[in-house]
Length: 143
Image (cartoon, rainbow, N blue to C red):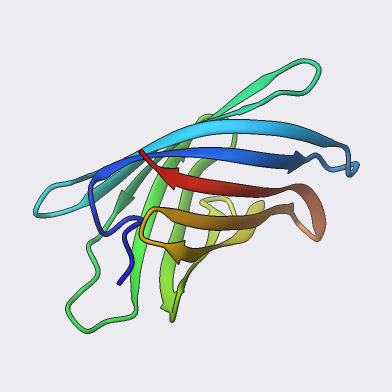
């Protein structure tokens, strides 16, 4: 049973972020999962410790997974990319997310592999058209 998204709580992230040129930078962040009856929220901040440091924000609104369903929809307000629309899909021990911006300029995929109830491995890419804009590899740990 998945714990990320499905249970309220705070998660810390640490790993590597690559820019469009393939330059790596350490990244640290946190995300807070909260639930209401109608929707779930994932509010996160990632700090890319490059030169200069950059802080990335996301605020997801997620429809709870319908009973016995393997997918649901989400939206996000991203200050840099605008409104994003996506879906979460459950594939065994992995949560897969696909998304695109409202103007279809940006799109991407990420996955969250459950290691155990308190740990996930996260990998993702963000594309602009056919060009890689960024990629990341982080470990999530529940606090």
